[in-house]
Image (cartoon, rainbow, N blue to C red):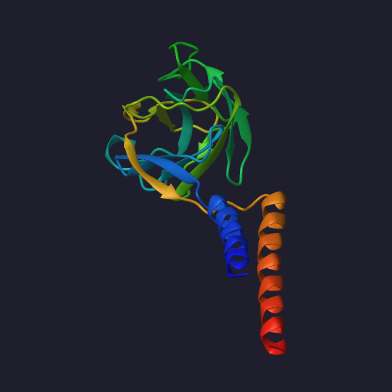
Length: 207
C-alpha cells in the first residue's frame, strides 16, 4: 500500500515539475540610457524590451520616436512583432541604415512600425513570433541595430545608429501553465493517492 501511495504522489509530482521546468534565455546590454533585453521564451517566441526609452542620454537625448530596429543572428527568417499596447508589423528582409529598413544585409530582419513608435514611456516591449523557421541565436548573441528618430512619419536619425551584439545575460526559470492533459493526469495522481490513504485508514480502523 505504501508503495502505491508513493507511486501516485511521484506521478503527480513528475507532471507538476515538468510543467515548471521551462527556462527563458536572456540577452541584455545598455547604451546611452537605454537597456535592451531579448528574452527567448521558446523556439518561436521572444520578447524584445527597451527600458529607458523616455530617458535617453548622450547623442540620443531628445529623440522622440523609435524609427526602426533590426536583428541578425536570430535563426528565424520571417517574424511578426507586436508592440504592447500598440500595433504589429511583419519583418522585412535586410538590415537598417540611417534612412530606415534598407533590404540589404544577409541574415538581417528589420521592423519598421508606421507611424514611428513614440518614445514617451519608460518601457517599449515587443512580442516577436517566428512565422518561418525557428530561433537559433548566434553564439555571440543576437546583433541589434536600432534607429531613433525625431519625426513621427520619417526615419530621421538622432545620434548614433546603434549596431552591436547583445550578449548572453542569464537563464530564468519560468512557470508555464500546464496543458489540460497535464492537469488531468496531475488530478488523477493526487486522487489515486487520496483514495489509497482513505482505504488505508479504513483498514486500520477495522483492525
